[in-house]
Image 1 (tube, rainbow, N blue to C red):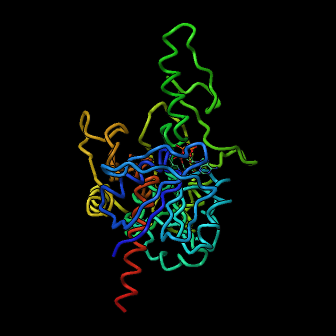
Image 2: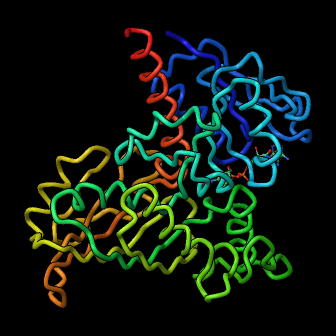
Image 3: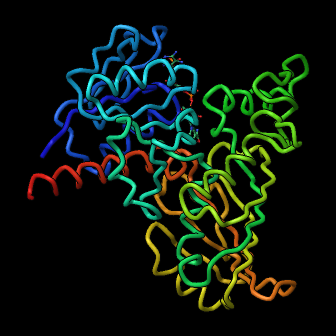
Amino acid sequence: MSITVVVVGATGNVGREILNILFDRKFPVKNIAAVASRKSLGKEVSYGDKNIRVEDIESFDFRQWQIALFAIGSNATQKYAPIAAKSGCLVIDNSSFYRYDPLVPLIVPEVNAQEISNCNNKGIIANPNCSTAQMVVALKPLHVRAKIKRVVVSTYQSVSGAGKEAMDELWLQTKGIFVPGQEVSPRVFTKQIAFNVIPHIDKFLSDGQTKEEWKMAAETKKILDPSIKVTATCVRVPVFVGHAEAINIEFEKFLDEDEARKILRKSPGILVVDKKEDGGYISPTECVGDYATFISRIRQDATLESGLNIWCVSDNLRKGAALNAVQIAELYLEKIEELKRK
Ligand SMILES: NC(=O)c1ccc[n+]([C@@H]2O[C@H](COP(=O)([O-])OP(=O)(O)OC[C@H]3O[C@@H](n4cnc5c(N)ncnc54)[C@H](OP(=O)(O)O)[C@@H]3O)[C@@H](O)[C@H]2O)c1
């Protein structure tokens, strides 16, 4: 079976990666379209060895298309996703706009693939935040074994998580620091990002946490288990691609680090690299272009009756966005094929 696919936001960081991954995973594409804002009309994006001309979302007719993978901001999603869904085109959305809507499934296929059965509620499926996606992949198998009570996470998030303009800001600011007269003031970020770290992602909420920190808790509850308590500190670091997370996990049942390592080694989407020696762990630059969520530094937290610390690294443009969206499309295809067989 092959299927017609639109990539919305095809000129952006996530959109371009969606096109690469659809091709790379041999997603059965019958026809493919690339859509972005009017300013990109006529630009070309690559899909395998082909170039596709970008179309303007304003005049795009979704009626001929079966799946739309959206990778645009929340405001534009709010406007265009319902148009696509009403045209009978299943929307898989990367923005945060629909994630907390109780009628919209929020899916990480390694964790809650069964939620695909709710895809017709609104004709929209949400993709989680990049930092949540990799964390729940790591938490799920440990939760099944020992029931997680509480998670304390600190993130080290790359600038690509804030879009292509944020990557330009890091690049130009880093170069400009060494060239008198070419200094670049912060514009996308609130403070200098070159040679710095910024403990602030998304807007501040009334209780002092940021929306990004709130999202990690709310999305973990929706995807994995509402009883899990999550407290997060989200930090932007001067890395182009790849998010890292230091995760402290408290369990209800006892789980030792050797068993946790064995469980994680067997779990879908995870690669354990944990040698307890110089360089025997994964850092963000090593995960770029990979599909896996890498787990390193697995160790007991001796301050808890049952607790572990882990280091979790993944390509935020892949598992954190494009790969997860394509995996959802693959799940949807399986569902259609299953229905046909019945
Ligand atoms: N980057 C990540 O790690 C990540 C992870 C999870 C989720 N997300 C979410 O994914 C979405 C895309 O992020 P990104 O990092 O790819 O951003 P990006 O690099 O800034 O790209 C934004 C894309 O949206 C398009 N766009 C902007 N305004 C539009 C409009 N009014 N109508 C149609 N298209 C419009 C842009 O087209 P033009 O080039 O024509 O302006 C571009 O293709 C965001 O909602 C983001 O929050 C990102």
